[in-house]
Length: 124
Image (cartoon, rainbow, N blue to C red; front, top):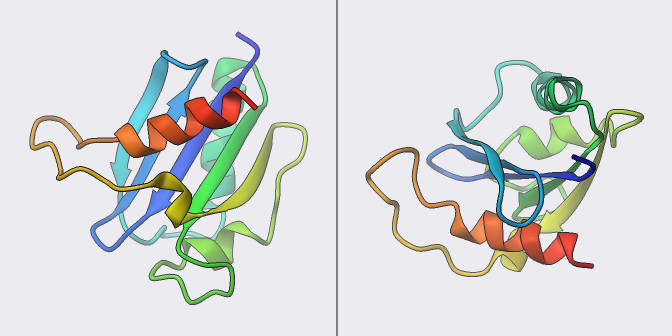
């Protein structure tokens, strides 16, 4: 496995996280608290996935804006560190995800918008 992409999407109900190894292999799908409990939560999560899988993680934080007015503290905390050897992190406007479908009540919800974004970005 040489390519691992992650999408992180904070929202009013919580933060959705998806990790994919290629266009059709979802390895992690989670719905986390809206605000991380620690400023290093996101970098630590990305590092842990990279170490577990043995590859660099390419992550996209899909947030509403770049100026800190997002409804989540995740934006401010995430951009003190853009990555290093274990991961890269970039900001992507939430509008790039497109429309979300209503939440699927089974499991942790519908992640089709994040999955679609990661597959499109991996093709570039």
